[in-house]
Length: 226
Image (tube, rainbow, N blue to C red; front, side):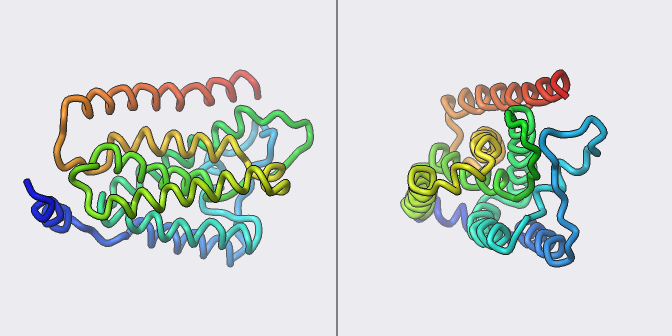
């Protein structure tokens, strides 16, 4: 199959970014109405379960809101257009919740702090680009653009970690790291794959098993620790 035929096949199944729009509207409504939810760390045993997902659509400041929502709109829109609403939904909520759980499980400070933000979901969406490149290198349209965008974003993160003391001290790094990891693992099993090969199926199975293990482990830690 030629590149032109591949591109036509992709374009036949493009979908509007409905979930991206939904999350953008929810985040904006929550922030500007002052209904942002915070998870206090270390968490209380009486903490309501719904606070965990609610933090993914909440933000603590104007800078926090803008720095999350603008890149989210960009990255998630393209992901959803090419890979569908279901993929966008799963990647956002699955990677985001896993990021929150890992942050809670390995919070090691005695000083109480407030946690909130879309960041782990955003990193999960970004990592879906890596899964897309791996599974669809030969078939993907604009693959070099996807790759460049991913590399640029990772360089921004590295520079922030190395040179920005405030970034190192205030950012919830566990939530970012495992949002990215889980976003990548779950994307391997949910994104569109035009030509399925045997090694890809094996990779998807391994990714699924690792992802489940990484989901269970922080829940176990939280259960025995708090």
